[in-house]
Amino acid sequence: MSEPSILRFENGDLDNNQTQTNRFEFVFSNLPNVTYTLYEVNLPGISLMNPESPTLFNRVYFGADSASFDPMTVSFLVQEDFSNYFELHDWMRAISFPDSFEDRSGLQKFKGDNSSGFLTINNSNNLPLYRFHFENIIPNSLSSLMLTAADAGEIFATATFNYTIYHREKVPY
Image 1 (cartoon, rainbow, N blue to C red):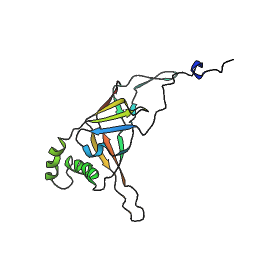
Image 2: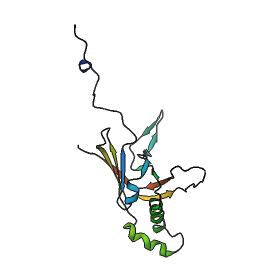
Image 3: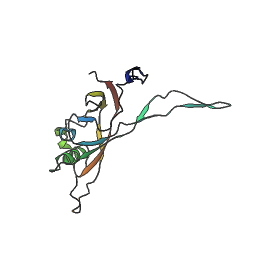
Image 4: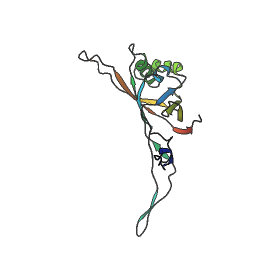
C-alpha cells in the first residue's frame, strides 16, 4: 500500500504564502534618499462618516459622500551624514514659513508642494504584488532624534504624511 501524498490532500492554495511585513518599498517622487532607508511604513486606513436617519426602531445608515484617510507614517534609518533626515526637514521648512518668507524659496528643490508617493508591497519571492499610489503627499511631522553616547546603535526617525487619496493596483508578474 502506498503512502498518501500531500499533493492529494485538499489543502487549498499551496501558493498562497503568508504576508510578510518586511517586504515593501516606498518611493517619493522628490525624496530619493528616503527611498532606500525605510524601516517601517503603515498602509493607512480609511473611515467614512455615514449619514444616518433615525427611525422608530433603529437608525438607518447610508453611503458616505466622502472618505477620510489616515495619515501615512514612515520610519527610517537615519543615514550617517543625516542627509535623509535633513531632506525631509528642509522639505517641511520649504512648504512653511518658520523663519521668513525666504524659507519658501527652497520649494523649487522639491518640485513644488505636491509630490507623489508609491508604496510597493512585495510577495514572499520579493516580487511586486501591490502598488499604492499616494497623490499630493505632503509631510506633516518629523520626529526628533535622540542622540546618546551610551548606545552605538542605529538612529531611527519617523515622519507622518498627509495626502489627498491613494489608489491600489495589482502588479502583474
